[in-house]
Length: 243
Image 1 (cartoon, rainbow, N blue to C red):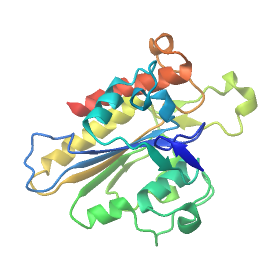
Image 2 (image 1 turned 60 degrees about the vertical axis):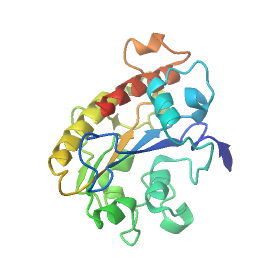
Image 3 (image 1 turned 135 degrees about the vertical axis):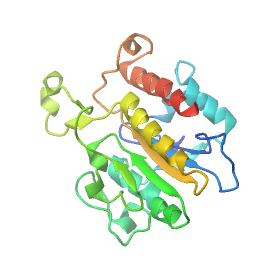
């Protein structure tokens, strides 16, 4: 299925952003560029200003789009979090890498991931994920020296009483953008200590826009819908990566 935008899936897609050198920008470049990959779970392209939505409050993402390359057309291999990320990291479709559903398979060790390729070339590698469906036991940890996926506080349990009919599939826990980005900044600061030796590759996965929609105050009143408010709140947190 072909979609306008970057993985523009009605419910379960991910929007991926690749940023080169936005962190530790004052460091020398003779060692090569630092790379940050940010994946935004369940973010539809038509809810972003850079893809033409005039009501979107996605000022950080829109600014990054203006400064970089904006992909207009992309094919989503599988509209689910784990398979999509397996495809992003291996460049292989689900029929090839074998991960076709959340929680139903593990990426095999025979797959070569982006992190493995970069660590073999001297990169420091770290990841912060925000959903249990990307836990290290599902195989995306391959190539990462640091992989933050602990299901402990400050993860936020979903309030199942709000949606009793959905208890069977709602994620039990997730991590909000403020905490995930704080974890990322902590790791990036540590990686920068070693900047004279090696560049770094960091993956940050954000899950705020995933159903159920419960944006933090006061964002629930600052967007056309609760879903848009989740995206707006997440977008505002991303500015912390520019500092």
